Image 1 (cartoon, helix red, strand yellow):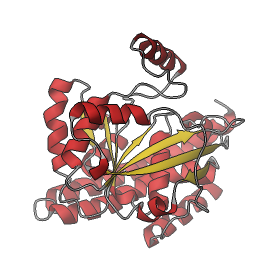
Image 2 (cartoon, rainbow, N blue to C red):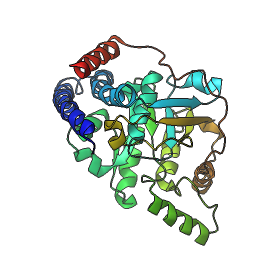
Image 3 (cartoon, helix red, strand yellow):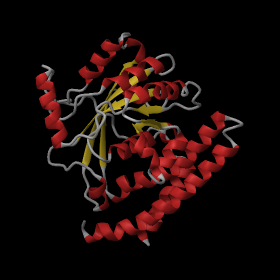
Length: 310
């Protein structure tokens, strides 16, 4: 790691730890005092508290690393994003995908209610994992016998969520690497499936369960494709620390939940059909601008900029 990345990582690490522990303390207090009285109020307050930590990550992406994001979608989808419950199924391109998802959620006004399905081990990560647990992220063991009932229960628990939420599920199940892509291509060839070029073969059980349990109260599935333009490097936590700017293109296609198939196998096939990488992007919205900036967002951005200048 270059010297400038090491120098920056020290103060950023201090800010992250201090802020993270403060956020976790507030979350714990709210969990013990507010949640027993009103789960809805707890979720609203907890989301606002957690967004302080996520804004720290977004600042790293946007202000420090200079990440540029171009969003491609139709105008009707753009209008609905952040205004409705949605199940998101993005490809898992790099270790910064989650942070890019937070950035997009912030721009579209639903950072407080951005939820994810993650592997259980992430729950025990200091600060990030604890924050995610308090928020109600869904954690899986990667053993379907253990996960099925937990996943169904967690999904049904979102029925009374008080704000429009995004629930992200990485259908590929793991982050793409050259070795994993090679294995996926061999598997596809052996099963006479389309050979993937930039994504992995999806694991559909989780997605099928999500669709069946969310169908009654979540109006849409967002098929999200992340891609890095030719000539740009794939973002990572390491390159962000080194302030290596890059660009990510995001294509979002909205599918009404009511239009998805009914049977398990048909839903699984629908998921597999969405996986092939987009060779061209559709209509680009003018800019990925936030629908509104709260006072908390504004004050926190000012604080981080001031800290970076010291």
